[in-house]
Amino acid sequence: MSDPREVRFRGGGFAPSARRGVGLVVFVVLIALAEWGTRSGFITPLTLPKPSDVLATFGELWQSGLLMKHLVPSLTRLLVGAALGVSIGMSVGVLIGLFSYVRAGLVPLVAALFPIPKIALLPLFVIWFGIDEGSKYALIAFGTFTPTVVATYGAVDNVDRSLIRMGQSFGLSWFSIVRKIVLPGAMPGILSGLRISLAIAIILLVAAEMLGAEYGIGAYILQAGSLYDLERLFAGVVILSLLGVVVSTCIGLLEKRMLRWRA
Amino acid sequence: MDIRLEGISHSYGDTEVLRDISLEVTSDQIVCLVGPSGCGKSTLLRFLGGLERPTKGRVLQVGSPPEGCLNPLTYVFQDFALLPWRTVRGNVSLVLEDHGIRGDRAEAIIADVLSRTRLSDFAEALPRQLSGGMKQRVAIARALAVNPAVMLLDEPLSALDAQTRELLMDDLVSLWTRAPFTAVYVTHNLAEAVRLGHKIAVLSRRPGQIREVVSIDMPLSERSHGNPELEAVQSHLWNLMREEAKAADEELLDV
Image (cartoon, rainbow over all chains, first blue to last red; front, side, top):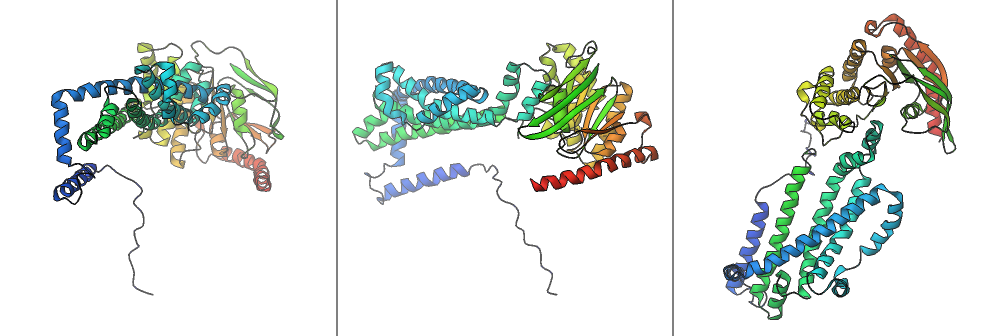
């Protein structure tokens, strides 16, 4: 018999937990590297602007009031477009999840619409909805619609059938079952679909603004790009990134509030 | 209110599940359905409450449900079927809301059923915070809230550990002795059946037929662990079922 050995630990892992500040450190390190690189000349000014210059541009933008002038129309477009797309998408998704005929009729249609790059349709939307805000709302709405539909009907499909059976056995009305059992049960899936939909909305927002807008972050970036003004271009990109972070945080908060029961 | 099953037969496609089942469920009695797995006893229970339709035969209500009965045929499910996003109180109030019972009236009913199931201190807890036994007590409280004429219990204790099962059986017995209710109780556990059943219907393997209906006259409150009379009934039931269970088991392997 050989000597007793301690049993090797092989459990653990596969359970990510919250680590505060790590994300921030990654950002700070990357920006510090860029700053050091551009200052030392290791990175040429043509490759990357100095982060401190981008920050200065950002400050100017803020002081001149131009920031708000670009941000407000962009946010309005995002809000209106996404609200339209997400609400119609959720309704259609729930209908597909509940009715066999709607499912049979619309699932192939959604599958056909999903892979179309919505940006390619912008000229068409300009004709249908006008060159101004209408076409931008429509583009964002259409872009958020398809992923929301797919996420919603998937989520409705995954609602525990035994809970629905329970509702029926207690004589709950059809409407009550949908409102009190199906929708809350589908909420986790709907919210994770919302994350994807809203990221797509931001991408489409910029695309729409690049194709015809006087103000807006997309227009700002396009202008800067055509003048090869890297500082301004990056300032615009930073705004978009921040917008993405803010949206994602908002959904995180929403999930925390609405899905407290899961924990 | 009594329930009468008349010549119930059922098949799923080519598979015959139940054959010509007739059974009477009398008021204020608990009828247990026992049988080997896959004999269609849970299916039969779903017919009783109108969640599924038999291919042949009818389920009849005899007499009208008592005054104040919101949902005459009420289930208690094996997997509890509690809404995880609602508190204990919310889960009970769910089944009252649709009958327009809100506010003080609902509060009174909820307080009553929670105290009968000893859950008053847990009204604000979410299902995930409760043990299996407590979850099933919530489900029973929810069933009591609608004041059912007949309770349909589908293996209500099968998802629980042995100790919890004992305790919950005591709970059911004391609930029944305080206020007798009519119930159909599906189980594969013969000890539960002899403890709770006034009548025990033994089903054969698929296609399920009633092999025998055993009546036990001893009052529920006097039935205890290791009672020789009950032991005798239980071993009689086991003899009836052993062959069926064995055959059913082998049949599943052939498929």
